[in-house]
Image 1 (cartoon, one colour):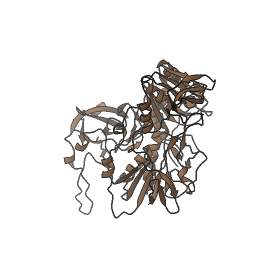
Image 2 (cartoon, rainbow, N blue to C red):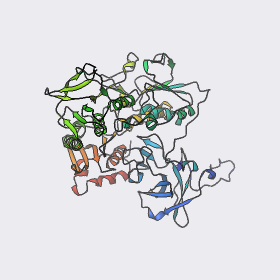
Image 3 (spheres, rainbow, N blue to C red):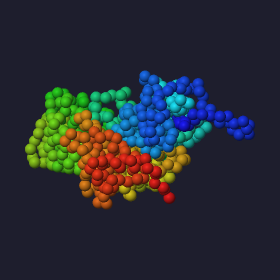
Amino acid sequence: MGGAVGSYQSKCTSSTSISKDTNMPAIQIPDIVDYTDPVAVCNAADLKENEMKQVDFDEDTRVLLVKQNGRLQAVGAKCTHYGAPLNTGALGQGRVRCPWHGACFDLETGDIEDFPGLDSLPCFNVEVSSEGMVMLRAKRSDLAKSKRVKNMVARKPEDQRCFIVVGGGPSGAVCVETLRQEGFTGRLILVSRENYLPYDRIKISKAMNLDIEQLRFRDEEFYKQHDIEVWLGVGASKLDTAQKELHCTNGYVVKYDKIYIATGCSSFKPPIPGVNLNNVKTIRELDDTKSIIAAVTEETRVVCLGASFIALEAAAALVSKVASVTVVGRDKVPLKAAFGEQIGQRVAQLFEDNKVTMRMESGITEIIGDDDGKVVEVQLADESRIPCDLLILGTGSTLNTQFLAKSGVRINRNGSVDVTDFLESNVPDVYVGGDIANAHIHGLAHDRVNIGHYQLAQYHGRIAAINMCGSVKKLEAVPFFFTMIFGKGFRYAGHGSYKEVIIDGSLEDLKFVAYFVNEADTVTAVASVGRDPIVAQFSELISQGKCLGRGHIENVENREAWTAKLLEPLPLVR
């Protein structure tokens, strides 16, 4: 019995031999010098089939050991995104999915296949001794860290091609790295409207006191090392697909061979009288949160308009720092469209328990300012007024595709762009992804959908880069959303309409699973709080081409019996 896994993008075997036939190519033997001496971590008999076990390689290094199909494989034990223990995650066929946020890693190579995150897992060479002990070797360069960057090629001056990535958000950040990982050796330009290197923007509405050094994915040296030109503070003003030229706001016009556009969204300001007063803020980018924090004191009275995730996250982040926070929302309960009324009511209670005033089934009809042009109060739909020193608008967004007008790229009425299953637009060599893409997803949605999820944006960046480099990789995304509110982790995977929400567990204790069931008695999505890894397991199930029906969750005594389907053979694709 011998397990073998690869380090980086190559596979290393646990036993090797050299051919004596000189006409046959010799089998490549891993350079043992690069690896540590073998370390015994457990008895092979300790692992059952399809079991995951966390073992200690040394006092600082934890390893995830997996037995599947009678074979042992070993990778890093922590998700490279936020460090979740992968042994508590969702095991699929040859891969493991993070229990917190759904990132997915190949057990053979450790490579990241689904997001969030950027980095892959370190791999370990596995052998079983004659005494039945599992022996691991680690690549020495991996021991100092729990994550690794996949191998990236260098720029070759003789390669005259130029690929441009427009948008410095999560999708663009993944795309430029994947292009180098997939072998692109030409000129590579990342055009970013913001003045910051790509950063983890999901944190900015949850923890508003972080600076760019704590948020950015990579430092400046990383991009220089891999010959990725980063143009900060530069936007796209026009795309000329006939000439294959990108016109930029800095006056430059750049010829491209292929281009990936992931320009994301901008915050939408509704046409409310007074909306342009001082201290009326939106929250989308790092500079937005800096502006909000600069305006906050212990005496500040904050109003958040909108019961969206971003408005609620801002309210939760600020309530302990200011005099008061009031959320004004249009629906009966917050998050009703996403979670339904039952869960929405419990979310409202969670906010009220944490001293946030909820004014639902309302809206703001006027923003009143003083002689200095600062907001001092807001008028609600019932004509009542509440004091306000800082108004945060969580009122939706608009897609940043105006520069594509007259480019030949077809734009939908909402600003999104239809793409193929390979993320190419109607114009050859123009790829589109992230928030602005109208794309197919894995699951029940037969039509294209436009979804602004962070995880999906990163996934698009990877798929686009693979296809731009000449390989063929089809979209197989399962939308996965997550947030943290008052210490409670909300997870949600899937997409589609529903007629009923089946709750398993306790809403009151915020330990539950919610199954969203449609007219055909099919589960279109699953949400949870305090019940990891159930949402990751659902995401993995859908990614395997399987589905979940009402009949699978009717047994109240064991509603999670369906998770055994994860390890059943994959459906045959004809």
